[in-house]
Structures are given as C-alpha cells and as structure tokens.
Image (cartoon, rainbow, N blue to C red; front, side, top):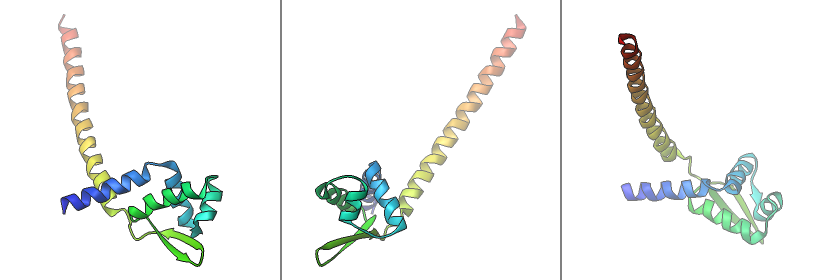
Length: 119
C-alpha cells in the first residue's frame, strides 16, 4: 500500500512540476479539448502535447477518448486527495519546527538582553 501511494504521489508531483501541464489542467478545468486544440493554445507540436497529456494521463489527472481521428481530453478521475494530505502533513511539521525555532530565538534574545543589563 505504501509503495502504491508513493508511486501515485511521484506521478502526480512529476506531472504537476511542469508549467505547461499545469496550464493544460487549468484549461481542461474550463472545458474539454482535443490534443490539437491544446497544442495550438500552448504553441507546441502535436507530438509535444501528446507527451504532456501522456504524463498527465499516467498520473490519472487527465482522461482521453478517441472518437474518429480526434483525441479529446478531459479532467481525470483523480482529485489529488492523497497529494493534499501529504502537503498538509508536511506543512504542519514545518510549522511546528518553525514555532520551536521561534521559541529558541526568543529565549536567546531574552538571555542576551539580560546579560547586557548585568554588565
């Protein structure tokens, strides 16, 4: 189960790491589009867009359907719940660490001020 979750997170974050792929997801959030339409919108070749869509499809973020000669793309079945939970857990961890660091710094500042008054 952990390996499956790790593989899904890896695929999702890899897909989301590219600005073009994030743009494709934003575009598909507004309306379904063919690969040709997406390639035109992002000023790239059909081959390049097919590769981007393939990465998104592998991550479950985009689904495609071929009707005749046209491959239409739409948002996929994944809702990024695992990714959101992972980010939130790490956000809480870092917040706790920064809060602890703030306390240490405040303690050192108070000690420094007290030492300065003793002189």
